[in-house]
Image (cartoon, rainbow, N blue to C red; front, top):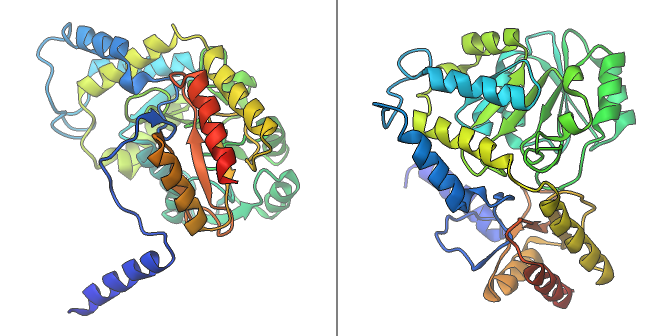
Length: 373
């Protein structure tokens, strides 16, 4: 066996030994409490019909883009969709990327320069961490949602300063104190970047996100809105000024050096926004309220969250995996989140709530969670 194969097998064995090995699976359980399809758009027949109807009106569209946006992969429809989405979120302009990962890596690796400072919440998404690693800027972390610790880091910052947070955190499900963070950024002349992946479609009068809900659109340098969660499609957009859009076209490598998404994908994204306009924004919050009320009544050890993401804490990888398996055997699609994805001792079941989950399913899930305690 070669040295590199020994290394690979050794690292995999480490993961097996601490019960954190990852495996792909094609098996899904009947009751979805796992996916990020919060509004049911990914499974929506209405959305599928709307996409098919719109595609049929576009003559001679290609199955693939055939190249990057800077070569053959751009189209009037794509640019119209970008402006349509920017207007929806009350932003000046936007640039679509192939995924939220691409958007975060492209933004953070290209805008902050040597001599600048990036300050991120300690629980920020891995894609943002990877983008920061590709930048030559100095990077600091601050304690999760801790304003005093953020201010301490701001006092150390030099050059152009960027504070990067998620509006709703993907593993905790909790909400960033965006107003207070915005005030600190204003006081220290820092640029605020907000990842709205898990707030889009959930917060705001029409699902515009938490930045819109809190009237902070003029105080945020850039927003990352992804389409693969509540919007039920795929891709992401960076919202900001027209100058930022043009800068990213010229310097964001994850945009420049990749084949563009085809027109069909653009149609799906714009159709999802059109469908969002027909959704009762209170329905998903009724499901969240029911879950929170029921787990409180049952005294279940859960993270504090007002979002679609609810975490039930356990003490180890083993106990969390056993809990997930028990629920899966009862038909609930619930997945274990293990260390090192989360800190050791904070392993959890990550439960995602959806508009299509019935009240009976939610109450039944909580009943079975109580039996695990």
